[in-house]
Length: 319
Image 1 (cartoon, rainbow, N blue to C red):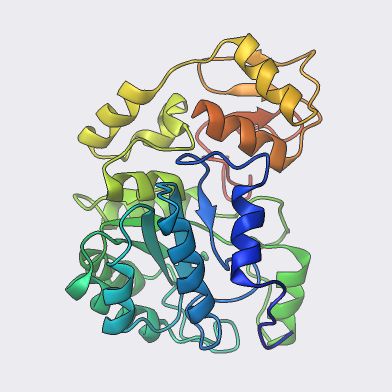
Image 2 (cartoon, rainbow, N blue to C red; image 1 turned 90 degrees about the vertical axis):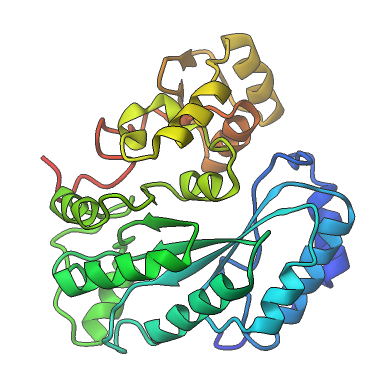
């Protein structure tokens, strides 16, 4: 569909959210209008604001992520600043790709939104969501320098690669773009060589590999996804953030895991708690996330192992 369609009223959506058995007040991280539309589009923004207000009026302090690449004006920021309870983060997606066959929304829109947010936001936190980074397309020195310049408008920068699924490959081929990578992958592709260049370009500037890490830094809280146990993810984080996450980090015992797993109907006969993560088998993403957020500790499925130093990315471009 090219136009957003309302499925249920805002009030119904919020009631279904807070009444869901898996929702934990003040803990469960939320994303609004992320899957199928942009929350700041005309016709969608009013519903975004209505939903935010209802959640905030309930006194809920859950992390709320709003991801956009569209226009944000000063009146929008003024409204967002009226919220008092939710931990709101606006993640402004920017790629720097100037080929409209690949990226139909100009990155200049995101750049202006960042500037507007920086000039007026205080309680509302800002993340430069630098994505997707694609080797040979938008990883030039000019792109890296532009990203570093834009980072001054944000409280944190998060960089990530491309979900190169078959559908994306066909989209690029239809636009006349040669295959960006030789193979598709379940996880995001970000070659190690690109990461090294990004980190060199951002020396001295707060930048993070994981979204929740950047959000946590912006709010001055510990990472709600419990990445701290996987130390190679955290090696680029500022010292004060590592100290904050380290203080909150606690290895759970197996009984805690089993109790939570029972709530999501996940078998735990072979579950194991290591210093890095909880390891389970036969799980879905939703089962893992529920346990992970409850424990503030990473939960991985053995069938989809997280290789050391890959940071949860595809194997493409790593040795």
